[in-house]
Amino acid sequence: MSILVLGGAGYIGSHTVYALKEAGEDVVIIDNLETGHIEAVHPDARFYEGDIRNRTFLDSVFEKEKDIKAVIHFAANSLVGESMVNPLKYYDNNLCGTKVLLESMLAHDIKKIVFSSTAATYGEPERVPILETDRTEPTNTYGETKLSMEKMFKWTDKAHGLKYVSLRYFNACGAHESGMIGEAHNPETHLIPLILQVPLGKREAISVFGNDYDTKDGTCIRDYIHVTDLAQAHILAVKYLLEGNDSNIFNLGNGVGFTVNEVIETARKVTGKEIKAIMAERRAGDPAQLIASSEKARTVLGWNPQHADLEEIIASAWKWHSTHPNGYAK
Ligand code: UDP
Image (tube, rainbow, N blue to C red; front, side, top):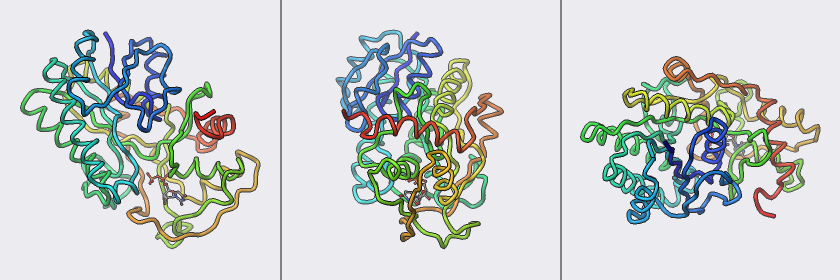
């Protein structure tokens, strides 16, 4: 039995492939390497370079890899800012790509899929911690396309019995303990890697996007979840589907929020370096706080995050970034 990972050369995808291999699974990867990195592809996985919008290409992989029992789908664009200036790119890759994928899966009678969703499906939350049943009103195109993907899966399930698990990630961070793979976005927009660019000498200071929010120190609160814990949730979700369970949606976070200032302070402690912070304007579309209730994933999937400590999360990110200051580039 093999598991097909779409986007297996990306940040969360590559960590999930490593976890699947550590669990002894046979893994096939598809990635178009637009934002993924060839260096992040696990050496013991079978890799096909190509785009999920290309039906002929997808069909050829399913025809060659006859043993695929489930798909894990990470192949999407995921930058909030970019999605606001180029929304149609997000509709094309995230929605049209997923449509072609589903057609190809159905044609090959593969009916189990786990896919990346996001806390951005909620928009400004009506309360925290956020439950899966809470209102979903995205404030950006990225979140909107992910919510539309969830709905595409829902109706495809009703019509064709395709079973899915949607995993709504909160703030993914940290890196694999081996130091072999980690976060490497270009351009980088995420808080923790940007903070760590300061002690690496790549950035003068970290800009804090707004200090007038209604939070304890005025800066935004997020729920930071270690990428290795996210990876484990995908393995549990595949198991859940292969056991014959019904389609479902789960939040993945630690249920604890930290302010931007607290994250910077923890990074100072972990790196032992001065990290200059400067106040900046609010970033458009940022909710004041996003904190997950992951009780459902814990109860139904048996998920139990192992790296919830923020110091440990930042230490693992620091180990990666300090040894790979230019990401995968030599
Ligand atoms: N943030 C910040 N400065 C930066 C990047 C991010 O203050 O240079 C803040 C951002 O406003 C948000 C939090 O850090 O409140 C996490 O942002 P990130 O982009 O990492 O993840 P998001 O919450 O958007 O998924």
